[in-house]
Image (cartoon, rainbow, N blue to C red; front, side):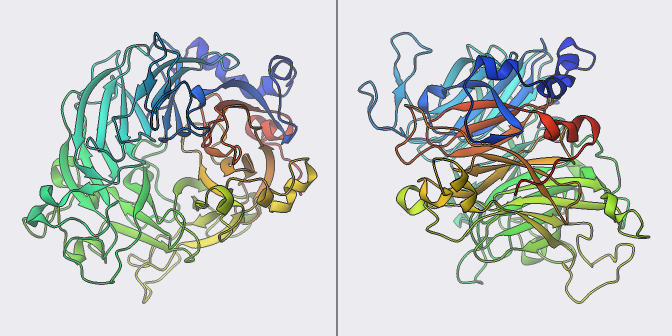
Length: 558
C-alpha cells in the first residue's frame, strides 16, 4: 500500500511541520468547533461524507503533490429515507440534480486539511458495498502508467461481488478498468504497489473452484497478481487456516474467517532482519500478518511471504497436487512446510480484526538486559460487534492487545531459544489497550455503556510511514472515539490522547461511532463514522505531539 510523501517537495516540508504547528493549537480551534471530550487532540477539518456510513480512510500523495483521501463505505442510510431515495441509497449533491446513489468510495482532497473538499463518489454496484480502498501510484505498479493513480476496492455482496480497480488520476472522473467477480465475502484487502500482489479476504464460489467444492471458510485469503491495473488479476492461490480448505472434515465447524492481512513487503526497513530472525529469510519484508475471527475465536498468524508464493513470484511454494491452488493439503496449511510461521490463539471472547506489526522496538527499560532487548510486536485489535440497543455493552468487553512476536515459533530455534514440543510456541500477549466505560462519566454524555451504539475497539492505523510509527498507536474505539497510546514501553503502554466526536443531523439515532482511523505522513489523524457523522481530520498537540517530534512523554490519562 502506497502512502508516501514526494521527496523534497514543498508539501513534504509543510507536512514535517504539521505536528510542530499543532503545539500552538490555536488556529484550528478558531476555525472549527471542537468536541468537549478530548485531550491533546484538536479537530482541524471535517466533511460530512453526505451522511453515508463509512469504513476505511486511506491517503495517498498524487504526482502533483495533492494529498487525496479515499473513504470506503458501508451500505445503508443511518437516518432513514432522505430526498425520497429508495432502499439503501442517498442523494449525491456532487452530481447535477443530486441523483440517488448507493454508498461506495468517496474521494476527498485533503491537501489543505482545514478545508477538505469532497470531489467524487464512486457508488458500489447494486446490492453490494465497498468498505475498503487501497491505492497505488502508476510509477510504482509494474504494469501501471507513470503519472496515473489507481484505486483497488472490494465489492461485498450482490451480483458483482469481488474486487475492482479504477483509474482515479482525475479525482472528478474516475474510470473503471478491471475486476474479478464471483468472490464470496470480500473485505479488507492489502495491495503491494511494487509487485501488484493482493492478499484479499474471500474465496471462489463452488462453481469456480477445482472439484466444484468451495472453501469451508468463505473469507479465506485469495492471493492475486494485479500488477496490470487494466486487466483482471492473475489468480495465484487460496490460503487459509487448517480446517477451512474444501477437503477438510475436521473440525466440524469451519475456522473463523480472515478479516484482513498486512504485508510488510514495502516497509521502509523491509531488508532489516527481524528482531530474533533465525535465517536469512527472516526479514521484515518477508512477513505478512493476518487477523482472523473479527470479534470472537480470534487467531493471528504470521506468514512467510516467500513460502506463500510460487517460484514465478520469487517464492518457494511448489503445489503438492494439481488442485493445490484451490484445495491445498493439510501440510500446505499447517506445520514446518507451511508458510505459516507464527500462530497466536486469542481467548474465545476476542477476535482478530487488525494485526499491525511494529518492528525493532527498543524499550528503554530493556536496555540493561543482555538479550531480547529488541522486540517485534503486533498491535492486535478485537472488534466489538453488537449494534444498536444491543451494542450498549451487551457482549464481552473488546480491547486491543500488544502481542510480542519476537519469537515467531520454536521450529527453527531462534537465538536464545530451543526447539519446543509445540512448533508454534513463541508469540505472547504483553498488555491491553483498554478504556474503562466509566471514564465517560466525566462528561455530560456519561458512561460509554449507556450512550448507545457500540463501545469497544475496532481497528488501528495501518501506515508504516506515519511519523508516529513505533511511538504511538491510534485505536478507533467506537463510541469512545479515537484513543492514542504511547507504546514505546510495550509492557506498559500509556494512553496519552483522545478525541470523542459529537453527533450531528446526519447521525443514526443510536449515536456516533468512530469506525476506522488512519495517520498520514504529515502526522494528521483521519477518523470516519460508521453511523453517518462524517470524517474528521485531527491534529495532535501538547505532550502527545512532543512524543513524535522530540521523544517527550505524557502523564498517563487515568
